[in-house]
Amino acid sequence: MKTIIKLRILMQVGVCALALSTTGAFAQATDWPTKPVTLVVPFPAGGGTDAFARPMAAVLSKSLGKQIVIDNRGGAGPALQGLMAGDVDMMFDGLGSSAAHIKSGRIKPLMVAGAQRNPAIPNVPSAAELGFPDYTVSTWYAIWAPKGTPPAVQAKLIAEIKKLPKDDTIVKVWANNGAQFPDVTGAQFGTFVDSEIKRWADVVKASGAKLD
Image (cartoon, rainbow, N blue to C red; front, side, top):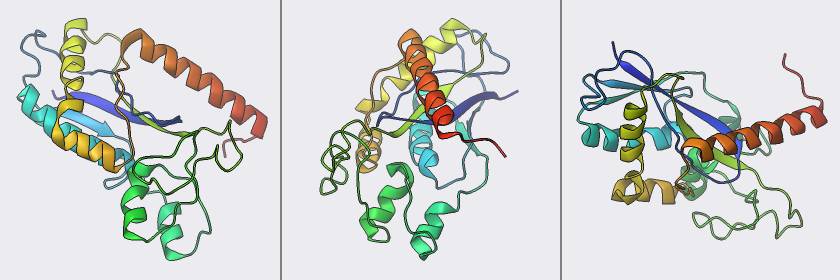
């Protein structure tokens, strides 16, 4: 049985945080992984999440000694395509999916949703500069695994993930997409997630939005 790791995306302030883990059958932690590892990316190939997942999987495949296989799921979001086609006037998007189109000139960025400009697009003003000092929204990514993942396996994977910011390929990908790579794991990451859930629950409640 393959080990499966899920990669999920949520909204937050310009961080790319990596937390951890896995599911399925495990050998002894010292031997893990003994088979290819499937990284589930619940978004289409070529999207913002995929832009970070693929180079990361390539580096981890080498360091762990087993192939990390990307499993893309989910349907393509039409908004960005509509913007490039002229069918959509304006949208909010993360740089993971839009940076390449900004640099090619296919779309024009109007504002960075935060207190500071993003080094990847330094000529684009921040929300604070445009009169919205409290408006801070961006994308963060995390690697998750189910409860019950052996602590030693978690520790091994976290140790390899923490090496990623030192890899030249990863550094280039993150910089090109305007992302940061903070060291956020364990209880600290859990606290961060809890704060995000509360933050966006309050926003949804205030907006009156409902699921169809």
